[in-house]
Length: 127
Image 1 (cartoon, rainbow, N blue to C red):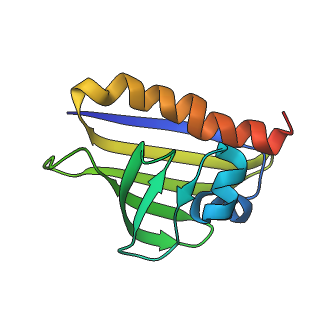
Image 2 (image 1 turned 45 degrees about the vertical axis):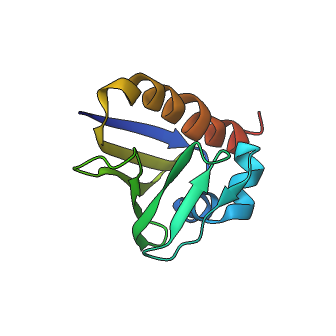
């Protein structure tokens, strides 16, 4: 199992980015794919036509999202923590994803960089 930690700078406020990460309608806008998501602890979510599925653990509006991502019956659980900080150019995002299965690591890192936060940066940059 591997861990991944990365920082991103997204040209949106922490509140805007929080909404973009926790509202199914907004996720569809920036990802271009169907999403099932609500900012309610204990609910399950699905992104990119079930490519990413999991359970929402906790939310601090405008500041923090904690989720469990499913990789079969893996133990310990794969946990994603997204922390949002105000920045003069928008929002500084601290991403921590722990307990990633070795065989999924490269795909997960590419997904975070290109399809998840890369898409959000493009969306808010108007690209």
